[in-house]
Amino acid sequence: METVPRTLLRDRAYTAIRDAIVAGAIAPGAVVRDADLAQRLGLSRAPVREAFARLVDEGLLESKPQSYTRVTPVVASDVRDAAAVVGAMHELVTRIAVPRLFAADVEGMRAANERFAAAVRASDVDAALRADDELHDVLVRAAGNHAAAATVARYTPLIRRLERRRFGEGGTCRSAGLHGRLIQACAAGDVDKAVEVTAEIWRTLADLAGSEGGAGIDPCDDTDADTDEDGADRPRESRRPTWPTGRATGRADSSRD
Image (cartoon, rainbow, N blue to C red):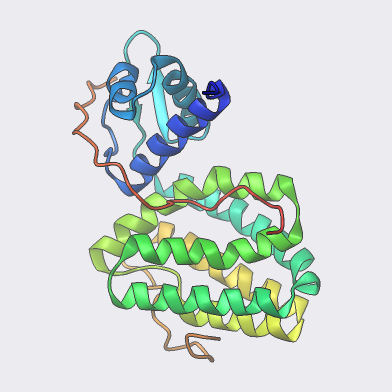
């Protein structure tokens, strides 16, 4: 039997811990310990420590040497900053991708949007965000820009944490109507319109962060849509996480299937 490369173990630890944080299975402020999580994941402590270092760099964990490592709080300004960066990357990949799309790509986006709308109606946040990722990943893959894809993958988890919390509190999420308008523009090969709608999608997320703690718009409100769905305090101890089964963030693979 071949030995599993250390890089794969590190990536496995990173993905599992990141997804648990994004899903809220490990709550904001919770202390995380490498030995604890290594045992739960069936890994040694080394790949878990490497995953911790990456998650600190990405803003999901914070660490005080010789004291603690804990999950960062959800901070609205951090989400707005991340949404601005991720939105700019999506505008870039949309501009590159639209002229390269095949009919099958557009159909894949439509199918993903149908799954998204159905999940929103069912209040299934995991399925909704998974479908949202699948829809936008079509454009990311078609663009083939690895730097943009990596940036999206790095900063999307910060946004997803707030999306999940607001979804659970009242159903705020990205609009299937906006997705429908994006798909229409992609089907028509209208690059400028597709970029315009993409920018609008990510503005709603920035507005969602801005409304945290107060009244704000609901990106799921389709009343203005012109298409249908097709178109140094002591941190508290961590509670035992239930590891999420679905993908919680956009993927970094920018290669075409």
